[in-house]
Length: 218
Image 1 (cartoon, one colour):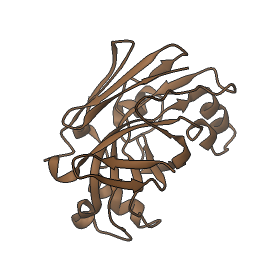
Image 2: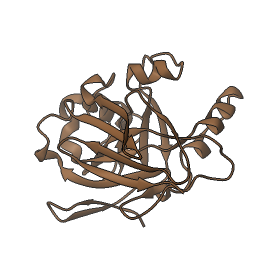
Image 3: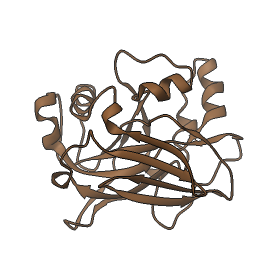
Image 4: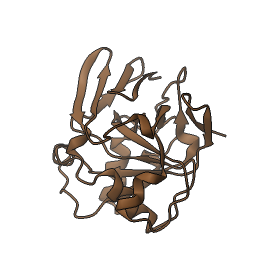
């Protein structure tokens, strides 16, 4: 069983569902040739996709184009069902650093056929995830600098202020569709600059005030 850890409070949560937002930064949507959505676009990763410190992303044999996407992760600490945006942050236990690994070639092939693309997003090792800091330690989750480097070279450098849908609205929207439970994780989208990694590369993701995560690719 995968767990989400908050070392500062010694809390551990068994990870449940991982709900992810696509196209939540306008520049990222544009770089992939997608329209900016009118409502949050959701997909999921299984808990089995999570890896952490000391582990590596393993690119599946059925893909030739694996991309990185640095994201702010939100850990749910209490049940949320049909919550309003005004009360949504009361259900957040912590914030962490995630990398949403995406098999872009597989995703594009499936999208072109109108088929689901979970196998491009939910494969084993597709969700590198850091430990979490307590929510109370983050004054404003919408003013955080997100960075990702590959082999020491900067690839992504954005800010959570540029989210189209902010965290309270995201939680309210998701909780109106299905109940969020303690241990669920929300990935809030990625800024522009996504790109390919190959076996032998090393990714370093960092979010100011939250932490960092270094993950090799094999």
